[in-house]
Image (cartoon, rainbow, N blue to C red):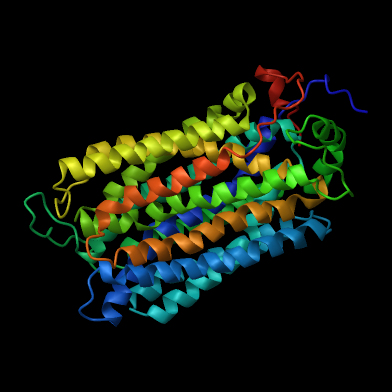
Length: 477
């Protein structure tokens, strides 16, 4: 048996390089989620004259949900296929390279087709992007646990999530300078009058630039990953530490390579995944419609929401940086529970201020207090994300990491399939308007909190971990 008292070390440099895969993922989805719902809103309004923004949101929700439904099916498939793939460049790298290349070519055509007022074209191009994004998303995420011992995965997940949020920040900053609401001519001045058209009004570069920049950075991230992370060599090098990590896993029953999954571990997995569905319903629900909330409800510039996204991202980065350390003190379960509680409280404050203060509709300004709420929500949800994925892949042997990564993302995509339709349909109901976004999210988070109480809290076997400069490990890959 491996000596669990031998210190484990996290190679921070290597983990950051692996994080370039996640950099590309969040970069793409930040642009996709920020621009595509509004593209669809405008195109559906044109296809159904006389319909208001709220009245077409269920159609927007359906289209965003279909994308997520495809992901729900494809993510587990690509995960299982990559588990069984063997090539000279590794089992994950072929999927990462092909998926990134096709996405980077197809992605810039979405705004071009929107500019040409082609609803069918935009939908088809979105479908192509989703399929090939799913080809590389699962293998890219699975790459970290492939070569990281189980006790170190929360800290490693924090690092790659920070890399991902840097990618998302690139897209968000671009959105501040290339303003979608200026292109559409929908923003209002503080006195309620329409803003004068700027250079961006109907100028294709105002919407094309973010997609082009995202495509270029995606390609660069894949190239960096390919030339710096030698997948097969790292798996061989990390074999002994991976085996020691198994001895320290936070599981009810020990995981074996060939044996069936125990009932206790299976029950733990099911509760985690069900809770995950609800917290993603909350987060993705408001995330999908927040751009439209700013443009159509507040009647303010879309750049305000981009700043809001950055503020939330800063909160997330703080959480990603310390989430693994918090989990090492109180366990992953209570770290996640604390993050969900903070998130729920942020929605409570948002709802109270919305209904008590009032006057938000058509105000032409973005309330400063929403920025504070987004920071707290970002911090809370980062504690959830940094620890939940390691909890799922903790329950499987190394040969099934891709499959269990697929389960994790299938749960999130199931939520993201349901929530746009549910929220978009609710907006059709008389009396249910944009003000109810935080109420919807709060109900979903409370459901996830209740379910997560049934997840067993398992602390890892007490061991020594290298810290400080020692934790960085060797410079070579």
